[in-house]
Length: 72
Image (cartoon, one colour):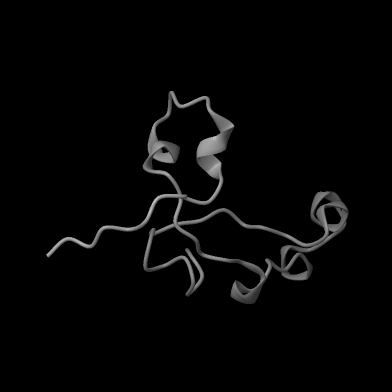
């Protein structure tokens, strides 16, 4: 289930934890391994190539540099 920041863009998201050692500790309860809050994330426009499984250019992960074109 995505947090409220991701929900407008996708119906799921991975759990992102602040302390991976705590997450990997078998004695840690799932209740003690809290995911990061929405405030820890930033939404930004990226190149559409990030959606292509075969894309190997890591530069596509960076912020989109061209201006946005709004469709009517």
